[in-house]
Image (cartoon, rainbow, N blue to C red; front, side, top):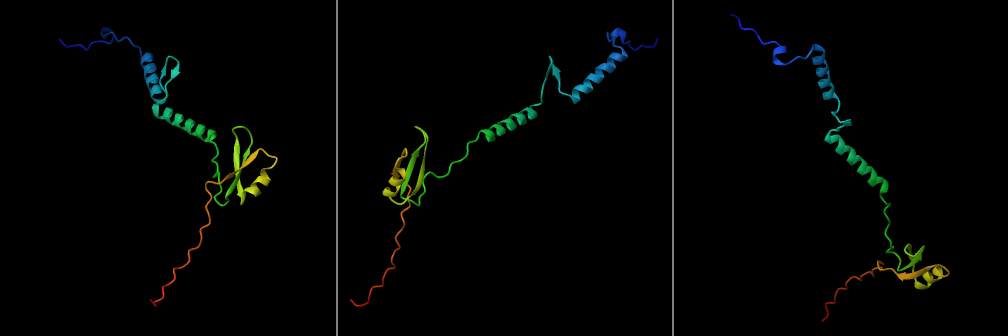
Length: 135
């Protein structure tokens, strides 16, 4: 007696051809598109990290404050400290004497200060004279 192969119905696989085609199409679509779970689309991790890094860099560029130049000019010995408000002030180091600075500060909310970074002009060293050989 020949052995018969079990039928699909006997194995509990009562799936029709249209259902198999639908499942196959859904499987292929899930490979191409992000997986949908409970109405939310999951994004692959590398794309999420790249997006986070791009937005962080953009925020850093937009929120960066401009760099300030050196406060004291080492070429002048006296600076004028000018007050714009209680906590906001700046320095103008363009004065060669306290009297010159005081004349500029007169009538303004400003004061003269000694420049702590003043580079004093260096005196030229005289060449060492040779000693005479007469002792």
